[in-house]
Length: 267
Image 1: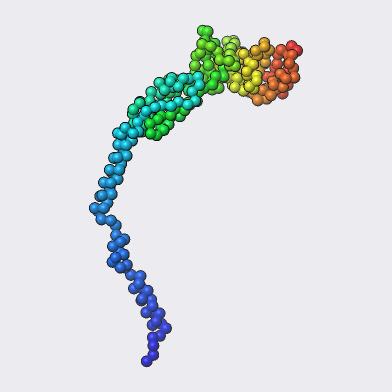
Image 2: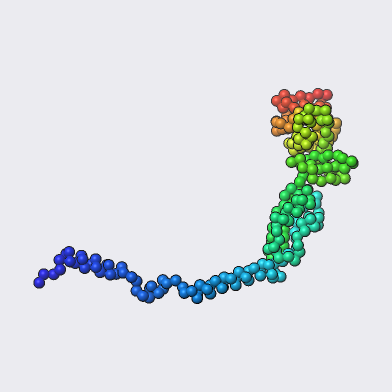
């Protein structure tokens, strides 16, 4: 009797493969089933309990409460002054402190602060990192001195002039620049000049005088004067002035208003 043909053997093999790819055995199906509803409910209860414990630890426990406030970066300001202005609620939950509100309060109460970073330091500290404004010019008024920073912000009034900070004198009452730009604009122009001065020149500058936007001059500590002109081309003017001061030590007046053609007189 003849055996199965090649075609018959192939058909039998395909049928066997089809059977093997059918539904998995019951034990495997049971393992693949989703957890019963009771398990899901239990997991949800555990999650809620853990969340409640976490909230209690952060807000209700005595472990994570404000016990101290540290201050970094204060120089002219006293750390106690910064802490008082910050008004961080002591013994409050550390997590409940609104750091943004504390920063705004500091900038509003202490204009000398240019920027501040308020951070939580676990488990019980609020850190205040302040950056103070630095004076570039002084405005004298009623025997006191108003400090101005590089942005033209008048941020503090002091009884004694800080050393090495030029005094601003405005003499632009009849200047067309005053009518065109306004006094505040001319003050900012003077601040730009002060900020651009080389360190050696700045330390030797007593007065920055503004007659108009294009007529800003310097008075040095030994009586020598510098015609600076406008705040424009400040780098070229700085280079020209330093070179002139070294080359013409006996000169009394320096003009760098046109830095490509500087001039001296009185030598």
